[in-house]
Image (cartoon, rainbow, N blue to C red; front, side, top):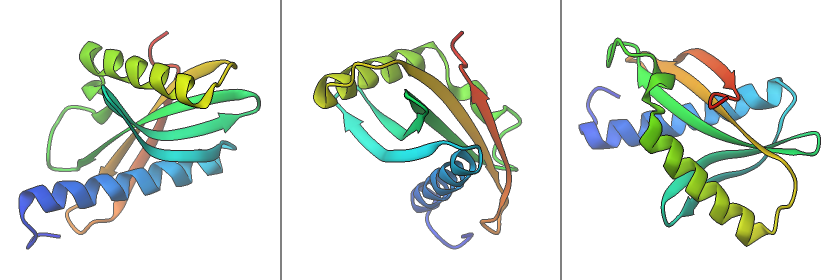
Length: 126
């Protein structure tokens, strides 16, 4: 990954993180029903089902050396508002009437492109 332009590496790392997050969600018993839903005010990285509940998952991926800040800490108030707006749009388009909750998956990737850590934080806004 080291020879790719920085913007390309970011895209590749992001995709790797989303795949790792989907794998983690499946291992935890969630059904992944969608990914990459683009709304006017944001994107929903993963959409999962847990029983009768829809779970919107924000994926934050970082390289181990990129930052000392935990990836989940990047989900600030601004990002939360964007997630809520995108989720409202998803709800309207799909006519979902059930409960929706949120989760954040933090993914760390080393310089060689291997996932070194995945962590699920359920209901981060409560």
